[in-house]
Amino acid sequence: MKNTFTMINNRTNESYEFDIYDATRGPSVVDISSFYAKTGMFTFDPGYTSTASCKSSITFINGVEGELRYRGIKIEELASKHSYLESCYLLLNSKLPNPTQLKEFDLELRHRAFLHEELKNLFYAFPYDAHPMATLSSATSALSSFYFEHLNISDEDEYQEMARRIIAKMPTIAAFAYRHSVGAPFIQPDIDRSFTENFLYMLRAYPGGKMRRNSNGEEKIRAIEVKALDTIFTLHADHEQNASTTTVRNVASTGAHPYVAISSGISALWGRAHGGANESVIAQLEMIGSVENIEAFIQRAKDPDDDFKLMGFGHRVYKNFDPRAKILKTLQEQLKDELNLDTNLMQIASKIEQIALNDEYFISRKLYPNIDFYSGLILTALQIPKSMFTPVFVIGRTVGWVTQWIEFKKDAQAKIARPRQLYLGK
Image (cartoon, rainbow, N blue to C red):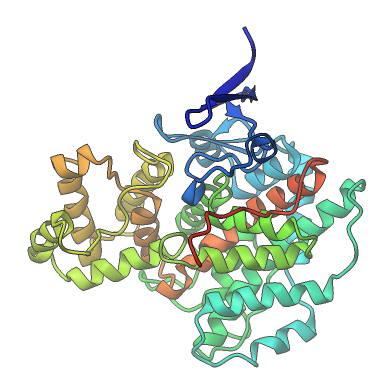
């Protein structure tokens, strides 16, 4: 049997053969790279719903079964048994670190977290009330002007240095962007703190290192808070060829600096249909206001003549329960107990979740709660401002973007991204 796919043009009765390539996991693909040359036509696939744009060995998703793996390891194992930095090392090196490697990786990131003194001046050029995502994207792009060296694609050490630098600095850039947006003085990284704790510290601390009190009247960052945020970073680390990752790869294809490519990914992530969804979930819960108002909004979501959509439900890829959402659902319950949380927003969210998981309308359409439904609630519980929800996503996803950039640059068959079109003009 031939390992090919035959297509027939019923207008001309001509047939064409294309090679089939098998994946190690997931669907096989038909290589249609010669389709235009053979047929004189283009394929038409808006949104790339059936198009594989690259070969990759980084992340695998099975949307039907609700499965997510980084380098072959299930997300459930990584989230429960390993730290975010271990997941970063795994994505970059295709293996989990041993204790010595993890310690070296951790120490390097701590020392690379500081920003160039001249870069800090850039923040003052932005309006005081600028959204942190706008500042974050711009500052990341500007970072390329400080590290403009040409990368040698045959030198693994250069790639690792480039990747570790941006991973380490992203929490600092994000924290500075937030503090500028509220007129607060910048807090420098503390090399005695871990990656995740350091981010919370840079958000919360006052000059001199004194911490503002949390909801329990304590001035320290609690271990449960660090664990919760670290888990969120892990769950966001990579997610195959989503919109922002595809943007990073497309910009990479032009030969642009990696930090410019990552800046473009940040901009793509900001959209409310992508990473901005977690912020939209909280905004919608606040709009609903109370448990008594839920039914009216549920009916609006079901009304085909109403453009209202219930945020935090359904996913482009997952047609089952998002495995990341399952992990965060459990984490939310832990936070509720350990931080004594029973807020109005959580009560509203819990009721909506209960209805959606038992309502035929949502079940038949496979509209399960997604990661954004739970992440916004958890970040709220961690007293992270709503405007920082998507920057938190950026911090977690940076390792995925830079890993995808490296993989693209190492692909000898990679080409500049250049989709074609179905022209309908005059």
